[in-house]
Length: 132
Image (cartoon, rainbow, N blue to C red; front, side):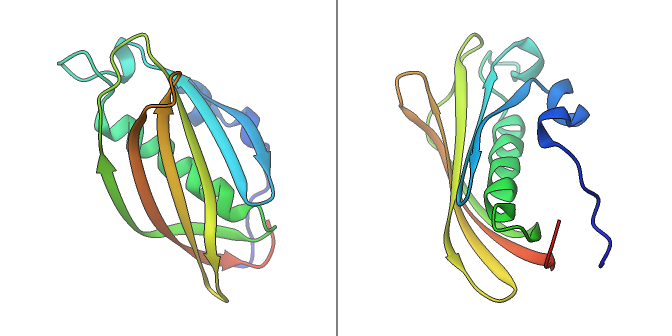
């Protein structure tokens, strides 16, 4: 796995297709945002848990990668706290809490415009390359 593709996360077609946008990216911190629409909602009219998890996982990965190395998700513990109805803007923030030789532990939270916590997760990211 010494060949890792370089790309601009702001131009990632998967993120654009899912309405997820990078707001801030710096060493040991990243923040994404999305508006919950019918496409991201479950039949109950709130954000689908899979969408929120995906957004959190992406933020955790980019936060881990902020040290210039490349990581993939190895394990995650994730808790859903509160729903986000259609029309809610959500934010995913992530930051590493521990870095080791092969792993990085990242904390991620999703909250709404009122900073009410919607989900929280802890990710163990596994290093696949010493560079992007």
